[in-house]
Image 1 (cartoon, helix red, strand yellow):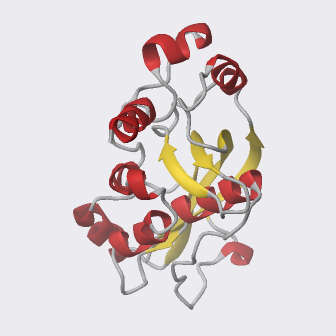
Image 2 (cartoon, helix red, strand yellow):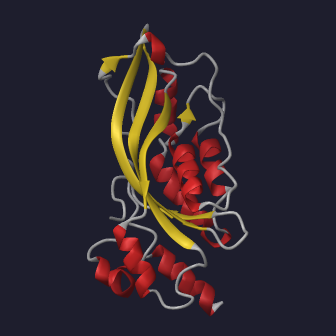
Amino acid sequence: MRFQHRRRLIIAMAVSGSALLVLATIGVFGLLRGPANGSELGRPTHAASESSLVPERALRPQPVLTTLDPERFARSVADALFTWDTRHSGGPSEWAQVLVDVADADEAAAVASDVRSFLPAPEMWQQLSVYGTRQWLEVESVTVPDAWTTVLAQATPGQLPRGASAFTVDGTRRREGTWGTDVLSTTRHVSFTVFLACAGQEPCTLLRLSQLDQPLE
């Protein structure tokens, strides 16, 4: 029980500031939570071309990839985190569930809270559904943060979950919807860090997510 409480404390501590003091004073996984920016469709930046029209068939939540490869897992988590379609009958909780399903058993509640901060609130979801809004992410890079190397070097045995790793994802969030009779599109650059564990021959599990646009550097 004592080990489990210590493990949860390490995962819950914030990651920021000097990398040399990460383990001593700040921790490694959960950054301070906060509302995700840009949670509404907003006024469009430009009309979408015919090649990017919103598809007639609504997207459905897809499960996160079951894999032993940490980078592939991080990419799949990023895709599931940013892909949703308000035309689907399920609300934001259904899109969040596919990420909770792959969470570490001890961190499922924390992961659920992390995921909610990336998704529109139910009231905003209803407003977005008026425009048939859908969202997805175009991943540009997936890299191990420099600070994570320091974390691993300074960690004592048993301080981190077995097979723990971190990947910072940079990409472009895209949204499309209909405004009157026009199909419209907005874009926004995003960055965040996925904390995960791939232990031996067991499939990777999700530990935590950083706050949007406050990745581990």
